[in-house]
Amino acid sequence: MTFDRFGRHINYLRISLTDKCNLRCVYCMPEDMTFRPRAELLQDDEINRLVTIFAELGFHKFRLTGGEPTVRANVVDIVGRIARTPGVETVAMTTNGLLLKDLAQPLAAAGLKRVNVSIDTLDPTKFKKLTRWGHVEDVWAGIEAAERAALGIKLNAVVVRNYNDKEDVVEMARLTLHHNWQVRYIEMMPFGDVADFQQAGVVTEKELRQTIEESLGPLTLVNDGELDGEARLYHLAQAQGALGFISSVTQPFCASCTRVRLTADGRLRLCLLREKEVNLLDPMRNGASDEQLKEIIRDGIWWKPWGHRLEQQVIPLNRVMSEIGG
Ligand code: SAM
Ligand code: SF4
Image (cartoon, rainbow, N blue to C red):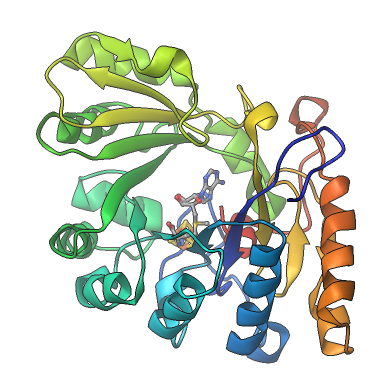
């Protein structure tokens, strides 16, 4: 078991499979984003080795993300290898859904249990504006394929003021009336070059709940407000699904945080909103043994930060979101 100095039990690893993406969401990366050369990224065997090491350290929950994880070559094999690693209990994925139409079934067969599909609005014009290139109907086809493949489904919407903060959040909420899905609203977080835009566009949970309640009626808190992962859950009367609010900026969930992240270039990112990282790639390529890597990981996790420093204008600048994985 692996603990940090605050006594938090850390057992959940999010792995960014690639920094590349087939979209350019306005809140995530600049349109002219440059990506890392392939040789700088973790190779399949390196991912496999690190997963085994993390599982031996007591990690049992793994999530694949990106960039866009489905554009990584061999993604189905990678999922299969992780799912078969002793100690691994769940493998999930966060994806923009564009390629799920064809991949949902093979991924489920390889051992994937759940997908979080990012879809910020159901309106095709606004979807294109937010993603710069995307067609919402492709995402929808991906969600349907995930449902056919019996994958658990959550939908993620990042809310951006003046883009999708009004009728779009209501239409997303309406989906839960007839689908047993969790629709989650994510508060926009500031990173790197796009921080000014992100900070100007944050919409708080309180505003969102008000917008939804004005159109669809009262929201009832689920589980007395106990967090489901990072989300606080509510439901609409008669709804099959739930609404989740992830308010990492205005209501951080540090006390219940169990996660660390592995960036596509092999750095252990200890907190999404802090720059502190531990390089695992170089020691691994320089011949470190499994025991030595475990020591580096344990030591890094011990120093996992608590709390962001956004209110003091300390914004993580060393990476944009797509390089960390969300
Ligand atoms: N490409 C995949 C996707 O979009 O789901 C996985 C990677 S993406 C970086 C992971 C999640 O982070 C997505 O739900 C995305 O909407 C969210 N995200 C990206 N930039 C964000 C930001 N600045 N603040 C909050 N969430 C963000
Ligand atoms: Fe790509 Fe996901 Fe970032 Fe959008 S949020 S640009 S889909 S990595």
